[in-house]
Image 1 (spheres, helix red, strand yellow):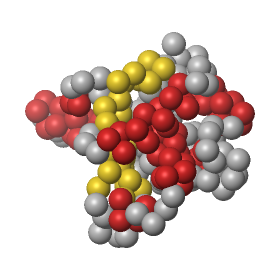
Image 2: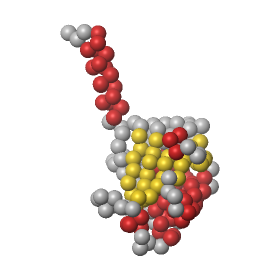
Image 3: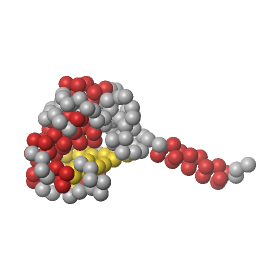
Length: 179
């Protein structure tokens, strides 16, 4: 039989193991839901780590597009370590992909604690500014909990220039009951 310390250690490890089941990449969504989770508040802070004016403007344009839906309120914050979402670019990713990032938390309603996403500048270097803006828009959509889709009218397909009515409905669904 387990002693008191052993039992506490076992329960602690079991809790950590169960909580880690929900932690993973934003793109690892096998659910049929149009979202993988949401923050515990509709007021979400963000910080743009990119230093280039060009990329800051692309990120801000994407933020403004999601804010224009009036479902969530993305607000800039100066201290990066306090931000719910961090957005940046990197010169390239080892796997050659175009987006990299993660969200922490168990997922589900109110289950995103933190998101950090980055776009690959080398992948996007031959793209137009409009295509770069589309990637930033889709990335912010993923950061706030929406799932990738092949629907080309959706910002989450990385081919649309603004969130669609369906994106707004999906965002409302993800944040239903959250103030």
